Image (cartoon, rainbow, N blue to C red):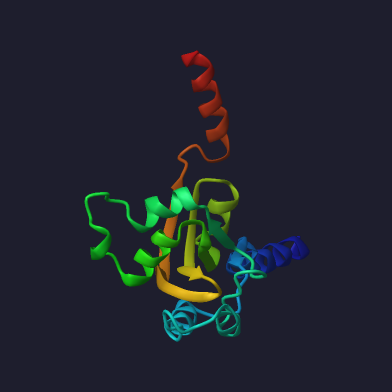
Length: 194
């Protein structure tokens, strides 16, 4: 009998430690679009060094924007190029940036490249048992996303622009009052509605 009580006490004293250690069992993941940049600021700083009408494709490559070999680069075809660079036809050609205007006049000789670079980390937070049993899931998402636009003609940069999200910080919260039974209820409801 004493052995049972001792075992019970030991189990009860270890329970808080077990519950705290469970938080480390929550899933986490990372999503990265490969680039040579560690942050949004690093990518933006490198692109700002490129000077329209002076910087060559080789110099862009040295800055980390290789239009031929980098991953996550989209070459925009000419019809889409017009829609992106001058979306409003009422704007006169003279009102556009010189690099955009020269690109539109060059037609097929001009190329537009869009670089999409990002790093995102997802960490589930909260109570392990509520998460594990599907009652409540909270996911913290942090990172950055960079989109750079390069307009090139005859191996020379005509125009550059960038945007994106320098600091991503958001939380996704999913609450399921029925926990592990929620998917069964949702599928039953859809069957009844048919």
